[in-house]
Image 1 (cartoon, helix red, strand yellow):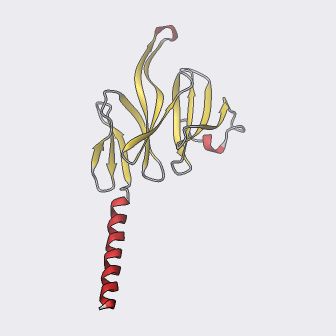
Image 2 (cartoon, one colour):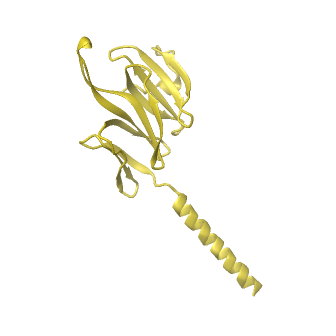
Image 3 (cartoon, rainbow, N blue to C red):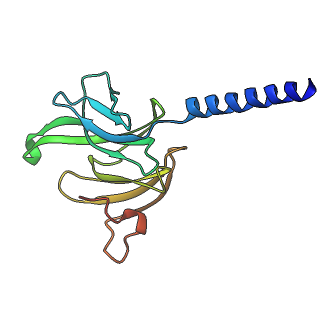
Length: 169
């Protein structure tokens, strides 16, 4: 009788562990894209397509981190600056999304964000911002805290930190 009791408890414990593991495991994100209206969508490994933005902004340059759980995109708006003879889309904010919610927004310190990429398996993000035509500030941010870890202004090829390589186009 005692053996049957322990066997039942063991079986229930294993079943509970498997159920909890199945529910807690996040599905991998296989694709992120902006639709024709500018809304951001995520496509999960099972093919499920989820629209993750609700407002009327335009979102561009989506990227998926190596962890397949973290996604980022640029919040883009149309900019018309006659004095600079400039008309076009620019981005001043990078949005980071994980586990069903926005976890961080990083603002450009300059006129616009020129490029960005995930670093350290989605724990950090490298951002290049600058003026509309010149001047580049390469910055490395910690996603968990939003703090800037390092930066370098207008680096030469020799001055470029490893995390800054490949951020621009």
